[in-house]
Image (cartoon, rainbow, N blue to C red):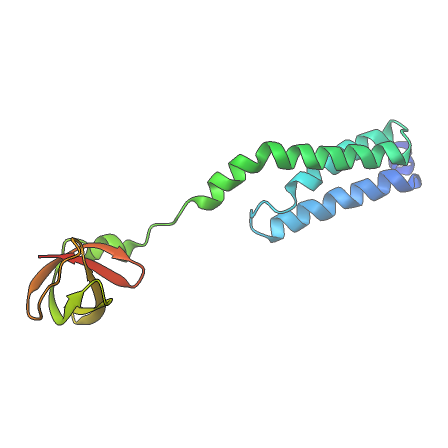
Length: 152
């Protein structure tokens, strides 16, 4: 075992790829699974193996570059899918279906209109595009950013 450790730490390339792999895994752990450097960590394992087999540094570097590129390309659709998952806002579903009172005429063309919902004032738009008069009781159909989409 001592001989193996001595051979690992006596070769600067093996030691360098080992340190690179550890650094990339630490960077990945520090970013809380944001998938930032895991590809480089895996590619550095390939380069570490190449260094242990005695390949020249040029080949080790090529294995690292090609390995990183292939891993990035192959896993890109998976990463996109993971990052596009929207965390649902629990308040959105909570307000849908509730009734509100129009406190300022709703006109989608001018972008004006306000409603009062559970004691809070919201900008509002009509779901069907029509105008809704002040004092009308409406139902929340959808939430679009900070505007309620309402219908009579």
